[in-house]
Length: 168
Image (cartoon, rainbow, N blue to C red; front, side, top):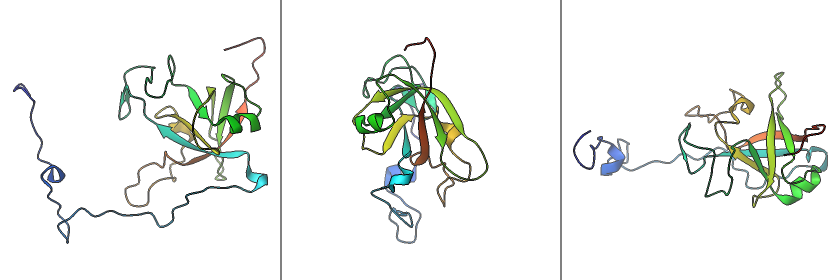
């Protein structure tokens, strides 16, 4: 710990050593891969939430409330949205919204108090910082092999929160 430059852990990948049958890194692809998650008109109230890390974050350790790379300052309680989605949900810049997980498993997962911000993100998708959105992820919604929570594709509904006499 004290020598200049720190110390190195022995990691096989660092030395290009893989303990596999081929001696090479093996990649596993998902059984299905939807590149376009178009929804029929009757399901247009559902968008896909992707969770992100800010530049001042390491894994789930958050060191501040600013994301200079994403241009968000002072809070992490935001929903980054395409301007067309904001119009479709009748939202304006900085409206307060709630998100509800759109799965039918008998559990209500809802979070509120997020600030809607227009952002250059694909239409039909919204973004927000991890771990703030963890409560929206069903425990059964995970990668098949590693059981990692599927925090990059959470179907949610967005709803404006009516706040009387309050502006953000």
